[in-house]
Amino acid sequence: MRNLIAVLLIAFFSISFIGDGNIGKVFPSVEIKTLEGEVIESSSFIDVGKPTIVSFWSTTCVPCIKELNAINSKYIEWKKETGLEVYAISTDDARFQARVPLIVSKKKWQFPVLLDGFKKLFTALGVSTNPYTVVLDKTGKIVYEHNSYIDGEEEELIKIIRGLYK
Image (cartoon, rainbow, N blue to C red):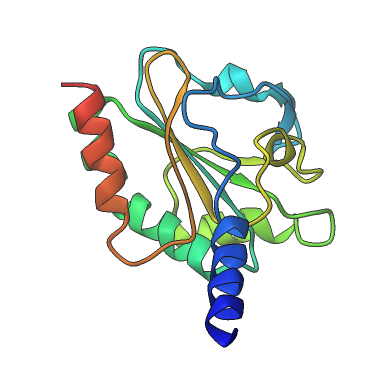
């Protein structure tokens, strides 16, 4: 009985950290904001034909910031090699949004950072936890997704990108 409970708990927590199976779906289009407050459609920043990584994060999520720091450390190299674009989308609500530009500046992130304070895009993807990262193919379809972050996981992202754009 204890083994069954343990298995059920593991299954429950594993499912809660996985997106709702977005592989193969077209990246949704909803209104989000730039750091300057301009409202844009999320589909407008997807440059069809270019490899794209979209990473959802928040200012209170340590793994999120670690993942974005790791991606940032390779960003220029990866961009030169593959044409890659990265978008970091903050899911912070109004209470924490003022921290976003401060963190971006302090960390010297070189990729665009956008705001999804009402979690419209996050919800459209059926996601409930940060970090959540996707890779989009040249048509804007999601070909890879993951929740959480473990040091070195960014290498998996570039392997996927290289595989798509040989």
